[in-house]
Length: 73
Image (cartoon, rainbow, N blue to C red; front, side, top):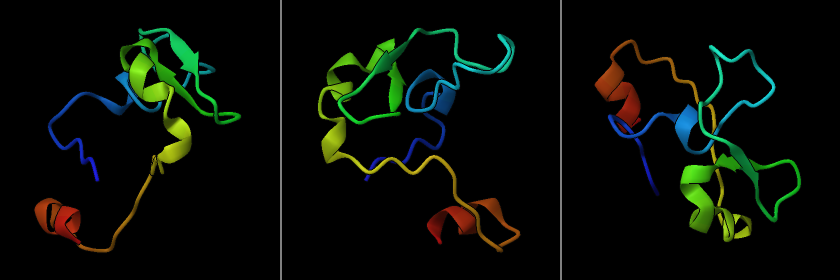
């Protein structure tokens, strides 16, 4: 499991959102992976090659009002 709390932005790595307006998408070039419809940014070229072995969770929600407790949940 890789949790990027305080790490690189999801826009700059796993979720480039190339179809959004320039102010809302990653400044890095999106690259394809072997998984249809899944793109990462050019910062993850080596990781993109093994995307079929990954489960990328791009969104999550919880009902805990405290951010650190919600992250632990």
